[in-house]
Length: 252
Image 1 (cartoon, rainbow, N blue to C red):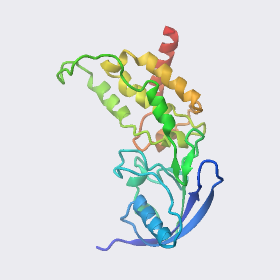
Image 2: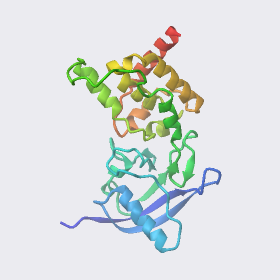
Image 3: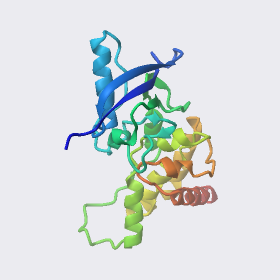
């Protein structure tokens, strides 16, 4: 069975660099297969622009398997587009209709300055991780898998938190540009395990301090971050982060 094709208009944010004022430009695309991914559609758009002697649209991508978090775009007002629990590279053109105008923007976050067009600099996330998102103590040699009993509920929750890919959707969709869900996920994935509990309080304190220093806002309590997260990271992790932070302050 032949795949269906659609004709669309793509309204894309173009910006030379972080110091240059940007603007939207609209391109018309014909015969786009509804079986193609969103990034494949953008590849076609760029091929057309190159053939016309124009500068292609810069956008981030890497694995195209929903793992790396690089393909972070605001599409028609939604982080990663109109589907749920997926990254942009997992979005397919069947989610759009013939004749539709698709608006594509970069993350609108002060702490993620635009590099060019749809690419943003997410170095701020790396700085937060460097401030405490790791285990620095000596935990000894590698034990047998069953040597340290961990309740299944805790291990499952730690794995869920570890599924965060650091794409920035939570920050981009929060009205305060808060990085609380990202930080909470990184704190939870370690705080729930024996190796990470020893530095738990210090880790939460340092990562929140770095988050504030980099200009991220406070949690808005609206839950938009959880709704737009491609991995479905729960707000419950923010509650754990707050508890870890309170313990850190009590301990001094």
